[in-house]
Length: 376
Image (cartoon, rainbow, N blue to C red):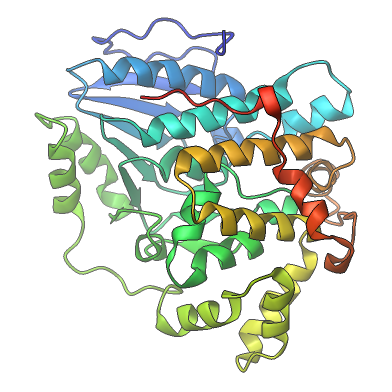
């Protein structure tokens, strides 16, 4: 079985909070199912137990006519979900474990991302706080995403020697004015209302209104009412964007609309906006050169693929990274999360040392081990 340790059966009439030892709370709240990521000390980082708890319950909610929406939130004041629990992957690699977590984690996470995209029951995700990596994958493919002034979005994978997975190939490649390329390559953050203007969020609602919003959603009479409630709670006048506005987008589009990472760097070096260019060049210089090339290629290819095929491609990439115990991914996790010296030793160290053939290897088919996504 794919889900080796399924949680206790989730009843359609469940009214009390259910908290199996999996880091997620499930509670029927009126006519919605409240799903709460419950690892606040770990910034609600997504691990395999959480994935295995959520997936089968989402299957049940699809068949439950009393569940008109799924309300997805994070416990605590700091984060919705700060990303995947990549430390467990590092530990498995360090200990040369015979565990299959390096395959299971990505396979089942991407299956959940795809399932969320296919839900007929609307999911309303509250991105109140840090929302990065794996947390983005839980939300961006769903029906509704609510940003607040506390939302902090990023896809920071290039800084840890990885790539923008959880469907990043799909949604980042489709953002306006090459913004997705900029966010993916630099790991830049978007705060608050900028997430609405960038399309990461479908709505922007002040933090002080979130409890009231959740109460209103719990009273909807049919799934289609979720849209009306969210629209009613969104202020008629939104704050002006801080970053996602014409001058910035114009620079990003001009400088990142290139055919290679090397061309982006050349454009930045010759840019008129010296302040922006120098800051961006400094950021890119710290990233894994392999990651920069893999990310650029995945966005190029993902722009022409449906989400299903993007996730299947990303699984191949993830396993290429997992295959080598000395890959930039494990070095990046060591430098940023384990030893915390913030001095990763990338290999290779220069873009010029990475050929297109080297990048091809990350996209190679796994044959019978390719990711299979069930039709819905």
